[in-house]
Image (tube, rainbow, N blue to C red; front, side, top):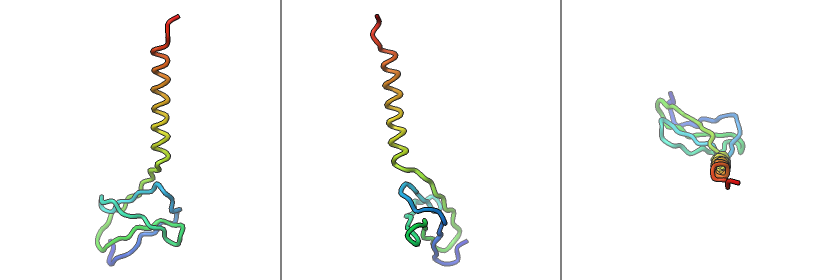
Length: 81
């Protein structure tokens, strides 16, 4: 329970790819002391969720999927000799 406006500061690295939500609503993550993650909270009961979803992971998943589909296509449709 937050009694007045405050910041929740996590003692791990502020790094691109992190997303936060407060009570299910997307929240902006700010850099605290240049290196830590923080989220502003208003008074009241809060549920804060942090998720790490870097763009590089999504790009890697997409490239892996394209490669797998290409391999299946090459094996399935190879010329008969």
